[in-house]
Structures are given as C-alpha cells and as structure tokens.
Image: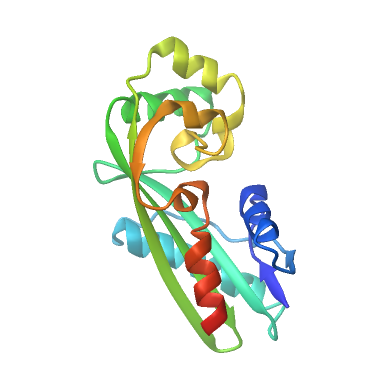
Amino acid sequence: MIVLASSSPRRAKLLQDAGLDFIVVPSHIDEIVDEKYKPSELVMEIAKQKALNVATKYPNDTIVGADTIVVYEEHILGKPKDEEDAYRMLKLLSDDRHIVYTAVALVKGDKIKTFVSETEVWMKNLSDLEIWNYIKTGEPMDKAGAYGIQGEGGSLVDHYKGDFFTIVGLPLKDVLEQLKDF
C-alpha cells in the first residue's frame, strides 16, 4: 500500500488523478529551517523526516513524504504567518524571479530514496491592490511563498521554466517514475 505522509489536499488530488491507490496519513514533525543546509538539502531533509515519521506506523508500506519551499535571493519563504507576512512575501516576489523546490522521500522498511525537483518562476509586477485582493481570498495562507499557481495565484505568475507540478507541490512525473523502480 502507498501512504501519502501529507495533509496537502493538492498532493492527494495529484496522486488520485494519477490513478494511484493510497491512503493519507499526515506526518507530525517540526519543520525547522536550519541555515546550515542549502535549500535543496533542507527540503529533502524535511521530506525525509515526514516520510520516516509516518513509516514508524506503517513499516511494511511505501511512504511518500514531500515538502515544498520557495527561495528568493537565497531566502526561504515558507507559509505566511499572517496576512501581513503574505503581503511581504508577495511584494518581494513581485516583478522578479524565484525558485520553487519540491522534494520527495520514498520510504519502505530500511529503503529510502529522496529526490528534489526545481522550477524557476517569474511573477508579474503586482500592485498593492492586486496583492491584497489575492490575500483576501485566503488562498495564500497555507502555501509556501504565499501563492498557489494551481488556483487564483496562477494569475500572479508571468511564466515559469520547469515542472508545473513542482510548483503545485508534487513533481508527479518524477514520483510515478520513482515509485515504479522503488
């Protein structure tokens, strides 16, 4: 059985749309940003910790853990603490480029496989009114970097280079390939 170690409805929907049979069991870890890690290493470590946390309850199953971070000028932008924090993040990202990293960890027994996908995103030049109108939708509050490309936040994005699903939070093609070999 496949176990998705995530409470993200977006990740669950992607796996469901791919036709996978799985259950959802959210992990319970503290996602601590440790500055000693490079962003790609940090996101892989958090994904691995999520998967290992759930694997203790499901040792004979394949666990899929994932984590997504947004990096702007070497600064990691997690989920906003409040509306002002969401505004700060979106103002930073406005009319500029950032990188989205999504890491995935597959765990079954003693076997662990981790990988990371990276996508560059360019945001439109956003007015304060556009930012506040978007924040008022509530959509940015549970998303790294304070936007969701798959929802209304997609209208804030000018273009991207890489995998769309990495930005959403699960590089689906890579996950399906890795699960075949796992």
